[in-house]
Length: 341
Image 1 (cartoon, rainbow, N blue to C red):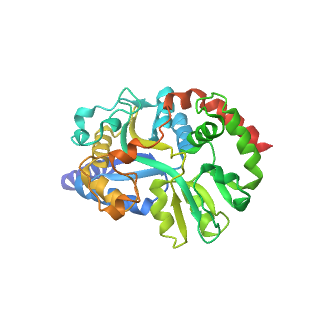
Image 2 (image 1 turned 30 degrees about the vertical axis):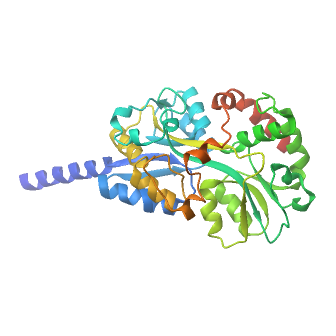
Image 3 (image 1 turned 90 degrees about the horizontal axis):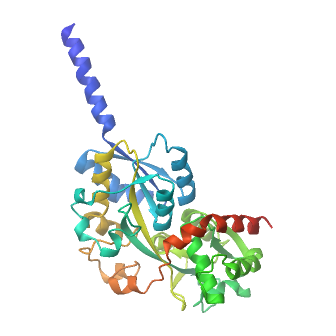
């Protein structure tokens, strides 16, 4: 009987240890197969820790984190920089102890503390350009103003303002047509979108949704994030990437630790793994994410499809995240009113 009891205790301990070896991650739902290949499987093999993902866009996941604030389920969250600032504002994040990250010294300085207070570590930088069907549009396409062209009317898609790139695109439109990206009302941008609304197939909320619209032939042209360009190329469709004459908005994605995270040690291992040279290289080679680890070197044919290299990064338009956070709720309300019209 004693042997049976001891055996049961050992099994219980083993099960407890096994169940604890996980990290709960809130992230986007794009490229999940490649994330498993480059991150989940090697992370499990290296540390014996399972990555459990909860996926969705920034807005949906932030709302869920707020609802779980008193008893968080998530340990680590991936956000675009200004959404991480919104999370800080909501009291959802705790500062990252960078002394626990052995790969921290290997990332660009701009990625080390992009939102202040060490509340997030930048792990990828990317741009947003225009992608269009070369068999459907004669072109040439070279400007953001081309979305207002009669040639593409009824076959375009724009990001919803709640998406990662939504606010930055609205600021860019205001800059192009009004000369001021930092108008708190974005009056000109909202008017230009109002004029265009009837010609928009949908205001997409996820990259996968947009990809399917291209596949079905409903959308011929749209703003596209650079990290999803590889997936668009894999469709085999005749597509072209355009760097508009007005420039491209730049974005920095960050990883943060949830305040009250239950798997804190695993969370630090996960973040350190994400900024390691091996992971950053693998993600770059598969065209998932552009690296911030300075030691990553990729072939020219890969580099041309990424937001890669200091000179390229410096050419991007980065909008002030605190301005976006300050005006975000107001813009959301204006957007909802516009779409409902």
